[in-house]
Length: 160
Ligand code: HEM
Image (cartoon, rainbow, N blue to C red):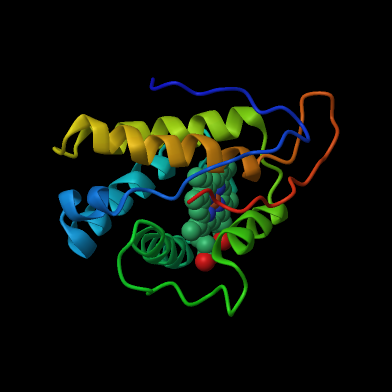
């Protein structure tokens, strides 16, 4: 797997939003849709499938919203409308508070994404840049620790 560093409870997490070149290289909205649909198909078969809706229609809805989020965060059009005026990244961190996400679940999530990225034929440095965003941002979604404690990460703004 690509590098994944450990989550340290309470640690400040800095991240940078993906380079728009990644979005262009993958083929814009259509390319992003392919990547994210493939990713969610992998999730559905993974050890973290139980986190997600088991109902196919609800699952498809999450898939759809997730795709729109990634289109927007990667520099495409502003098609993700659920944040309702709230900072998009902060909204996304807080949305995950509803789920008990462990380091292991994060690792599995990243593994599914790595698998989906294998199908994408773009320069490695653009994949690396996207990975750097995922690797860091995903730390903010972890809220359940091996000692049984729960800690909701403080949102930190992205670096320019
Ligand atoms: C880079 C890290 C991550 C990003 C950017 C991300 C992004 C998203 C997005 C955009 C959605 C859909 C939001 C909506 O409903 O409007 C979502 C939902 C969700 N994510 Fe993540 N996610 C990340 C990491 C994780 C990890 C590590 C897990 C671990 C299990 C996870 C579990 C979930 C679950 C359970 C849902 C909601 C499903 C439902 O609505 O029932 N996410 N995420």
